[in-house]
Image (tube, rainbow, N blue to C red; front, side, top):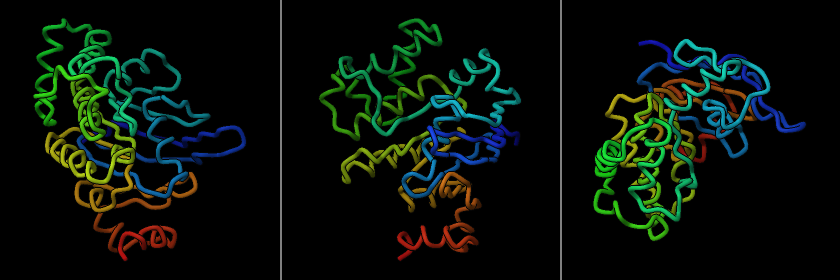
Length: 244
């Protein structure tokens, strides 16, 4: 399997606050990676740097063998092939469900309305939202909104899907329905990078876990290794809450 991302010496600061400090890791095509760690450890900033919602101060991002940071054409390619699901959904609240899933397809991918509609409906059915296609987004529950957001990302047919704490804005009873949708997506063979506080979920679905602490990758490994036999003291301290 080939690398789809190579991250080298990535650094990101906001003023005097060094949020990412010399981050290095590769992502293999088809791999499912969960990024865990305390709030403020740099997880979401790292994810946002991967599709350049945040621009790193230094380092290198290589996507599909193309250097991204110094070439705007490569940036546009990256954004067309790397989808993102946000914790707060980022839907158009003045549009209905179907429009939310077709507008980007038509604007960015230049698809016809007919083609975009067919693709959107297929993906809305995939996440259990097929019966809601004409409903206004503002009338949906949080879990339903997040499923629409996932369908919207899938409709762009990304090679990589990034999830930034996809359940953190949901009421507890809605978390399970969104996690189940993501679990189903893991069977499609898509490359996925998931920032999450849901430890049991991360352990179940991931090929690899990255534990971040204070802006660095403190430890990474298989779920088995990281959860059952962590090497670093700070990993052990963080996981105590989960394992107790």
